Length: 575
View 1: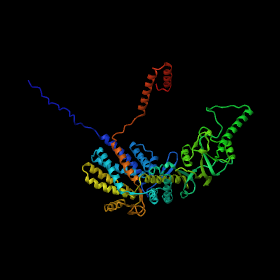
View 2: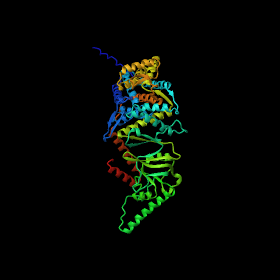
View 3: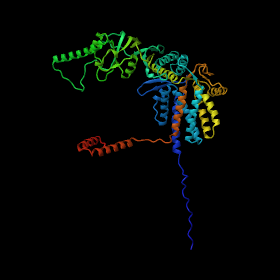
View 4: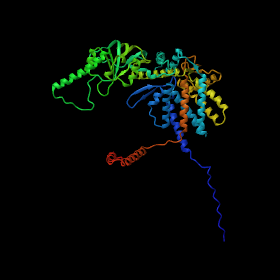
């Protein structure tokens, strides 16, 4: 009889070795990097003084012409989640520094390109992310060592920095006017008690169509882009003005709820009109008794702030009226006039008024504005009146002026200047490349790749200026290797010069925040290995479950209440 075949014993499955399919994770990571790089490439041509402008057409028909990175990205309809992170990155740079919004996105795109190359070489994302963090810290130290200290009393250095910011804008030809204006505006609102803090909400920009950008001026006082209400023949110019900011209405009161009052008798109608006149007249007498001769009336949504009758009595009392002042302007106005807003006629007192030498209505172009100058005990605020031949130019001038104000604010916060023209990026690339040779293993390989990525700024500057980027960047490397750390690209002359002597400077905070924010964003994108989509159906199910729990809870309460609530939800078809 044949012996049964002996079966070979099965090897037990190993607990330490298992196959994990990482292809989906790699695909998601690559898709995120490609989408984010597409956003960076969209704004790359706008970098530098010779960069191209973008024309943005919105769904409402509005047209915007700009080369400001934050504005371009903010108006773009970006759907991919990782690409949206670069839009947020640009917003973050705008908040922190106000300038360099295109630079930070271009650097992030170059870093992502190197990350993709490193991932293809088989390096783990965590190793790349940690190396990127070390590069960021080292880069900030190198930039700080390159920086030149500046004092706020050195007005020329501040103007040079603001001019560099304006040179890359559409209105660059007006930089000699706007740069000193931005410096004077910021320095006038710096509080000696807090010398390192500047609130740009204390600088109000008023836009008025007509004239050219050359007509833009800094006003030590207030400007209202509206005319005085003189339909009843009221004054348009008041000297030695006593100004009140009121938040109540000088008009007949209305009922609290919407209802109609039917008046069938003429005597009753006359009585109502007489009471309205007496009501308004008594209010104006109280206002006139304090010596007030200028009224700033907040816009009302409940009823008319002033009526024709009240304007008639105010004109008789020789009181200049400016109505429809926006609610969000009240704080700035009261801070400037050093007065208090008055919310009730019973609280109208002389000590709550502001004082100014002159309030007058001025004709500008087709329209009129109201200027308040010579304010006594004026708060630390200022107003910039921006002029322009069309709305596109005015809007771009406002954006450019905002960037210049932010640059000066950066210098108030961190009093260091650094060369522009791609000089800091090439010096960073050189020093990080030398540092990579000291490091060992994968870290050295990653640092060398990131050092190469920083050359994208001088490369793009040369490319946008119509120069040969390879020749320019090679020569720039050679000059920096010889110790010329301030050698940069002079796009006007089309050659490499000492960029500090050419007065092309920028705040240290702009460069350091661009490097830090770009690396932080790239690290975040690298850490993502999956995208989870949440459908509306699952949200509906969660809401329905919550309502079922609510129903079960209410049924334990008194019957009538529970029935009413459940009937309501049944009617809504939730239950």
